[in-house]
Length: 102
Image: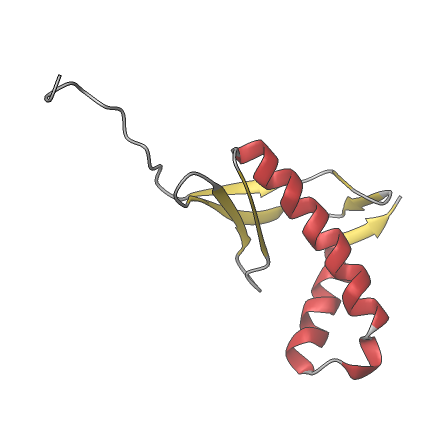
């Protein structure tokens, strides 16, 4: 049927609060506001201050990927702390302020 109704395949970007446990026995100290966007068959979760991001085929998988990314990124930045420029140093300080080990 050429005129059959098709539901929209794209969703408007939405703000979402991520909170709670992270991988590696870590937890968020406070909720992080992220933007979730539909990007051609996957969802992208982006942190609004430094735009750290991750993606997945569903919103929940994209959120879980984002949690893995920020937890891992804390490790990466911490291991190179002596060589970080000012922007990456800011990111590291931000991650340390919102992530704690349980």
